[in-house]
Length: 470
Image (cartoon, rainbow, N blue to C red; front, side):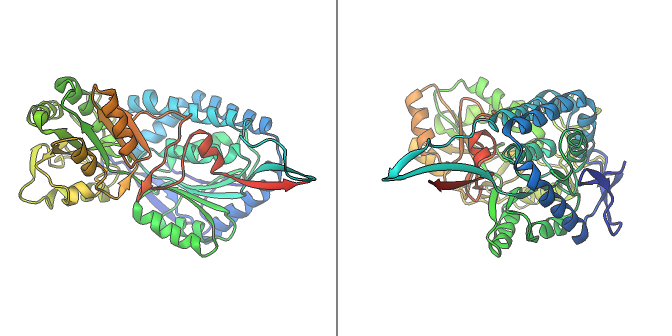
């Protein structure tokens, strides 16, 4: 299997012949290669996007809508190929991607196709005597985008769909371990978009740094780690590029004393380990009222102990492997460094088999300043902490630097509304966790970054307001 760059409507190797290995995370074996793009490739892609911007930015919203709708239809027609590409790079269960993720990805493309024709703005008006003011919303130019390995196709679409709908052109670098579905998407898009409108560059961290530092992009949008976000923001400061950062989360889950313990434990066990916990909004920190803490923890542990992990060809597996050896080592490190007071109730070990598999794990008796509470695990691990009242629950929930998502579980509507108002996150669910919709924004606070994906808010991220006075 060999992936290619997609530049100016053509599939290309790296100019210097550089390649990166692609490893199957379910077996640890080599499955193919992708280009490791260098400075010449980055420059070629940026120049192609810059040339294409002159035409694409002047197309009507209706033209851009039709192109994106045709792309969405093509994605549905090639669902099997997209599934195979995504599963090959990630090892996730095929049915989970096909039924849970791909329909949402296609819906995102269709949403932004329509949103392109309904940009909000004020009407023309006279705000000073003898002058009429108009507001234009214009595309930014070339957008550099960098996407992660946990949801390769979904994150690519969350980035490129609003950018293209707004009239920008794109140079997108997928994660080095998971380029295949994004490369296939670019191949499908080439049938509906002019050359240079969407360019995909495979590569490593060096490739990403060259793309961020290239003088052409007007904006850099990234979904990744806090470290990566800080480095990119620092680099973009040199020439004042606009920056859009979605940097992960450490989601608190507030479980109050009036819930049905068994039902809530089952619901959270079902959702917490989806995609091996490699999700920036994943259930991570369970904060449980003291009166039900022991009963809930026992019910949760019983259910989690029954979950299994396995490869794409193991239909009974609840989730697949971690994406790469480095991520498995990170999860192992956090568990190996647990303080003596912490207690692993179930799991806690990597599987003794090929691939990057880890048991579903529940850790109790943790304290707020423990590393595993303060840091994003990004793996199949949840922690449990007790709280005495609403104030303490909110203090624990807000007591980390990441602020992307949270959920509240209670039958008391007033309590739920107090929590949604007080939680310092970009998303709050009540009596559920993890569902996103194209119509609502997705973004965080604090170390989770700034800017929004999805929704009309996400579309406006890729535009510039211009005041015209007549």
